[in-house]
Image (cartoon, rainbow, N blue to C red; front, side, top):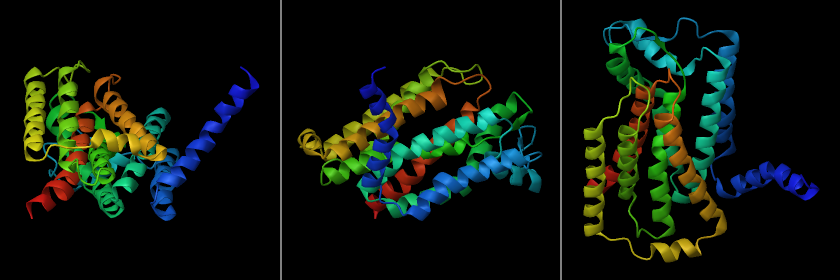
Length: 293
């Protein structure tokens, strides 16, 4: 490798950090809490072994069977049984937020994102536990643990932030409601693509998601066809173009990595529940809700 290529390679992290500072408007305290303090807490919990006995048992009769079951439905999302499991989840978390935060800044959704983060961290764990129990609880009695379902929830907000940011740079020519199209399209791929045996191909669901996305797109086009989007995209500053490129890449590869090409033993149903909840919270709360008022 030539010296010039080596310098370029070593300079990538510095270039990425500078781009992050230019495009991200979140307070440093918020970034520290979410990107440093939370991962550190998960890591210390694994190192100290405080997660023993805090996993969510899929042998439970229901989410509300007793107080311990309800408690572990929450705590299970913040413990890990292996270092590799922890590292994988943290890397996915950092990559997802690396693509998400600039979109939040472009869209001007800083306050909404903070509220969503609280919902993802405090409320979505119970949705994940319910979805996991309703599906995998029928085939196994093992414990369910890990942060990946919450990471999937943040991933579910990416299509909303992508289109909301696009709406901002086009002066509202494309409505944030369009985010339902890539979301349902991704679900169609997930249900149509082969995964692990306990998450089989479901063609009817895939077709339903595809049809829903097509109908939603047709309705939105009929109500207000987006105009001038291509011209606006060409005139968008390079930093913002890169934000859209990275956000789209995180969305596509995040869905594939979390819901399609998964290793055996992955809680795909938990990922799916987190992903759907992660999309519905901003879509219903900040896109559909205001439109109906």
